[in-house]
Length: 498
Image (cartoon, rainbow, N blue to C red; front, side, top):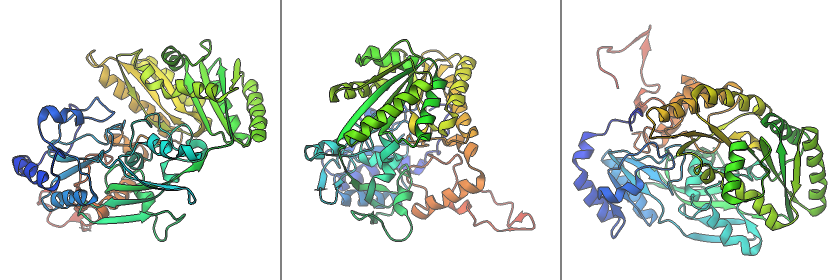
């Protein structure tokens, strides 16, 4: 992990590895503990594969009691813990640490309850995102947030990262579709937040946990909202001669009061890669492609299709194809869903970014990315959730060429700085993890970061859960607000401080 500063391994923990592994086997018997180096290779990184690190030991619990005992054991012995779902995180949020127990939740893979009258599903965190929809689709229901990795990503990981997807413009992110969780704190205490009811009393701790990236607790159960499938869903495939015109069309559709079920944008490199891979029938003579899906009653959908088509032509659209069947609609989306692996066929490596901007800034940011592409001498393919301004630039590079990974990372950092500069944020759904950790000061001042750290300290005062992620400085909770300064001088200034 050259170039990436992580917490210094605790020598005492490393020295007790054999003892810790033996104790983990007592807590999680059978095949629930993996400690051989060659077997732990499968867990050495998440979706941000540029960084790899073997953990101290991998533990795969099956029960809440086991999770509680593992965390309590580690808390009492000052052992770090990194929670992990399916490992699809693109920000390094599940990157192991040399002296940390990697707590893998993949064995928590059962759906515990389906309540159609109240439209909720209770699932363990290892259930895949798509698995929830599969479990309820025979009754005409589905789970709305649909990341491109939905076939593999876990619902627990979705909670950790507040994952999105192509249909989140209208139906919301994970935060808008999770009603309750069961979680285990670092001290082993099991708590419940929310439930099947609509609202909870008191502070919104469920909102705090959603998107907390494994820093506050380990989720062991999730209650989600399911929706009835709309009566009709149709999609438009709209091509434009420039990305700027496509971006303006997005702004005009939303400005007209139309909220599509999904609205995605792809530029020329992504269009060609997806078409070669999936053969979805995408036009190849355009610079930008919009996929706009409208759902609801048939009469409403037909009316909105006419409005969107007119807006598209006013913005210079050169092609507009409207799906005439469910199979055709799904084919439109097949290329978009497969865009990431498709781009992997045209470049030895790519670096998938994630930033969010105000919709009106799309033309400016796309132009800025072109300038940065020329500056760094690296290609970029754009695939993103245009409706809510969540960008996913794919920076193309070759890790075998010395210096290209560093250039790709610098290119990505400049894209994120541009997002913040135009009034956006560092991430939309991938999280901060280690990827954007050192860019946090671009968006937050020290007071902001200290306040966020205080929330972390309230849940995990010893900083044992997923340390080295999100916060740009590696500090202890004791450094926050507990140092008395009198007339500009701290007490006992000669004492070394962490």
